[in-house]
Amino acid sequence: MTTFALPKRYISEPGAASKSGEAVGDISKRVLIIGGKTALGAIGGALTDSLGAHGVEYEAVEYGGYPTVRAAREFSGRAAAFGAGAVVGVGGGRILDTAKAAGHFAKLPVAAVPTIAATCASWAPTSIMYNDDGEFTEFIPYDEAPVLVVADTDIIARAPVRYIRSGAADALARWYENRTNLAASNGFYLRWTLKQAELIREILRGDGLATIEELARGRCDPARVREVIDANILLTGFFVSPRNTEEPFTGGFAHPLYHTFSVLHDLHSTLHGEQIAFFLIVAGVLENVPDDELSERLSIFSALRQPLTLGAIGLKENVDEKLHAGIDAFFSAAAAYGRRAVNISREQIYSAILKADELGRNFA
Image (cartoon, rainbow, N blue to C red; front, top):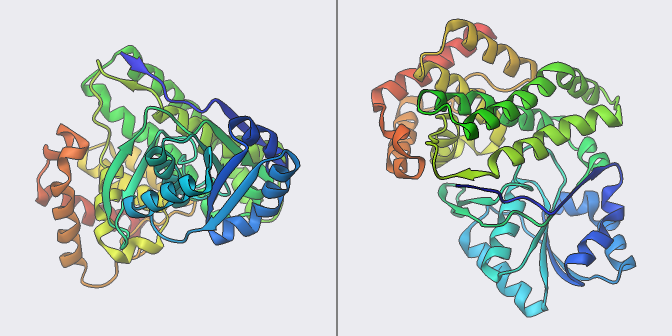
């Protein structure tokens, strides 16, 4: 059986925040807004003015921590105390995962307003949860995605270009990681998702790279920028929204390594997609992909200015000790990732990480 958890509305256009009040008001006339300080500063006025113009009452709260169960439950209580009929998340992946979890605990619909295009968190029907120190703890899957996603492409384009580059690296992971399932299945579901991953790859390896570089230089073709944003959010989110119970799905190594290596606080200043780029090189070594594919990965992630070495992702001191701690965490969480995660040894992972680091240093 294949099921879908998709937003009911996805609004992606310049100035979308200033037009969002009607769409939010269709969900509820009383909402709790959870946002990061920077995000609320970037988009807050346009959003709240539009809410007010459409008769939507709101309470806005800033949050700067990791998505934790404790914080999400506190926000769910705050939503109840305010009498909110919906939760609105404004910001990046941490805020949006927090808002989705708060809505889940409060049994309220969620609207997502991403201010960066670094992940598909605004779309995905799941939250990745951490503890207060930023260490991965669990996934919370949902039967429903956020009911509304408002992607103001003007706001997103004005964010530091590092975020959209990182989002592109994460989006490209859908191609590399999902192909690892071909050995176990060639069913309809897998072939369909691979075709979607090909479209992501086509967009981001084509005009997408040039568009991102133009954006970095302060030039912006709104239509082309919107296509990259939609690849990072819509296409990547839609990729993870269907769930199939009949075809085996094991995924790759990059995301499990990213989540479990969060026990290494040295990596916390590096963005999700930046670490995914490096761990995709590690995954390529583990999976014995051909040398030309490894070179391709290095080339595309270099063009996106992603980190290609351990030092570049923040791991510079006591490297051996910390790598072993990360590998231990990976195996401790193996059950969360299915059988593929346990069909490999600690020594193989350790060697693959060192090999990826060597490849990155030589490529640079």
